[in-house]
Image (cartoon, rainbow, N blue to C red; front, top):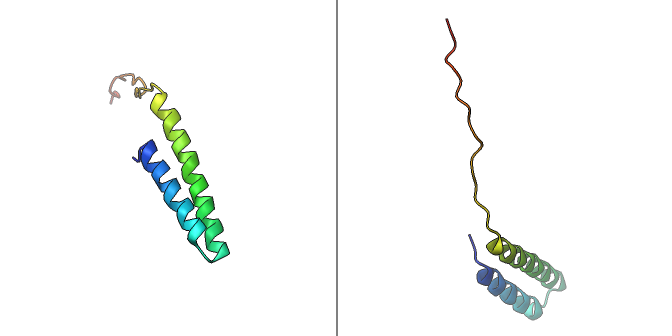
Length: 67
C-alpha cells in the first residue's frame, strides 16, 4: 500500500504534467487525477493515526448433527 508521501509525490508529478500539457483536455484530466491522489493522501494520513485492530467474529462451536 502506498504511503502518504508516495501519494503526495504523485500529486506533485501530476500537477507538473498538467501545467506542461498543451492539450487542455489532458491537462484537466491530469489535474483531476492529482486531486484524487491528494484525497488519497489525506485519507492515508487519517488512517495512519487510527489504532484499529481487526478481530474476526466469535465463532460458536456447534455439536455434530445426529444421524
